[in-house]
Length: 295
Image (cartoon, rainbow, N blue to C red):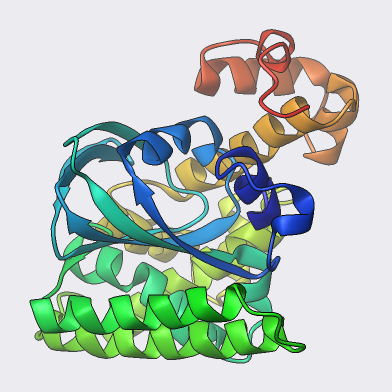
């Protein structure tokens, strides 16, 4: 999948030597740059936080249309489908991107993962509407990150990880205040988040719901009910989306044969992989490979 460095080089246009860090990146974005993310979104292995500063943006998230306006914070998590549709000419936002690997390895992982998925579990969508004071506070946190990433600090990555943890804790506190009464039980939320944490690590090898249910010590029926209750999608939907993301990445950025990709993703044979890819992407692996996004 596309890592943070890939995004900064391909979408933000930064040369390799100008990329400040592989773990965290914060910048301001306009409508033009936001549209460019569509070409990588299906394979992006980052958690992203978009704080709308002015204007509006419409998008489709997991088949659901929504419009972001000033003061809205949108959170993208790997494995979810997103397409930007339209926006106002004056659209401006602050974008914070956290590498998935760094997030999953962080000592503060539970707070980070919980914050990323909390709006989905409680509100059914990945958007939180903030007060002006809350939006300004997160903006200041983002500006701190920008200041550090533009510095020559000897311990830059460690500083950025710390600032990310502070950002997430501030955001989680705001979410708790905004959501108030919980719509789902604490246990249901924890199981959903635990499933989403397992998924990036095991989707290539384990396509079946049984593995994830066994790992969480619950039945497949229970896991299915939780995921559908919170997201209106199935466990298989999420596994398939992760497989599609990885397959798209491998086809566009490597010279691995289609047979090798099918084997890496644990499909029975190239034919079954081809049918899977064509069904979900609307084109064959071979045709998709011709549309390389990166040199």
